Length: 227
Length: 90
Image 1 (tube, rainbow over the protein chains, first blue to last red):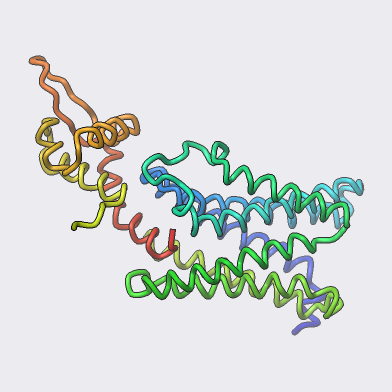
Image 2: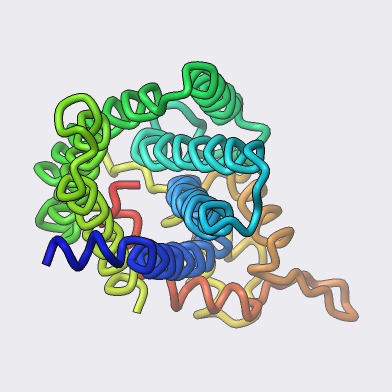
């Protein structure tokens, strides 16, 4: 089974992209509809998270696939794809965490018209730029991995608390917590895949699999609640 | 003491009052909304600017509020919005 997966790796990556891209599109469209009606900032940041995830995966696997298949030869193109992928992925993580925290920082009665005018979001944009720049200089993804591990560690704590406080009212809160745990494991595996497992194909396939389960969980929640 | 209503609950209550009363006068809507006059004015201005309600003025210059299609859509989707916020901890 693992041999088959390794042999058909590129095809599976494209399939993975299509599935994740479709999931993100559905989540963004459904949450955007609710946001336009409610102007609720939490829904906005949740929508933004999956918008950025969608863009990140599109860049990495679609544009990246063109590069790896030799359709585009410029090494700078390869660098650009990696940098953009990392930037949008980091921002997606920030938005997902902030969707859980925004009430502690913002005035509920006077929502920001645009996230660009929100100083906290501006800080996220700056932090993402710094992370991406330093990773680019060091030719690694370590800072991205570490930032996401920290983000999802916090998200686990917050989502667990939400589940304890409101689990009877919000049935999906349990799955949200599970999704955060899966994301944390995924990022940790990503981080240790090179130094400990020497980029083992089995570990990398597990990362893809866990990631896919996380996105499917969110899709399940969004579709069930908005039907 | 009664718990302070969330912003979306206030909007729902106002829109429900407009929906129930069809063409409702400002004073009656203020009374139904359970808001201070200042807060009421802020919410009404927001709801008009975002096209949830219309302010209609007749030939005798009497003002009434009516629900728009977007306002009706909000009321239909309110439960989904509330569930979404609850279930994703937003």
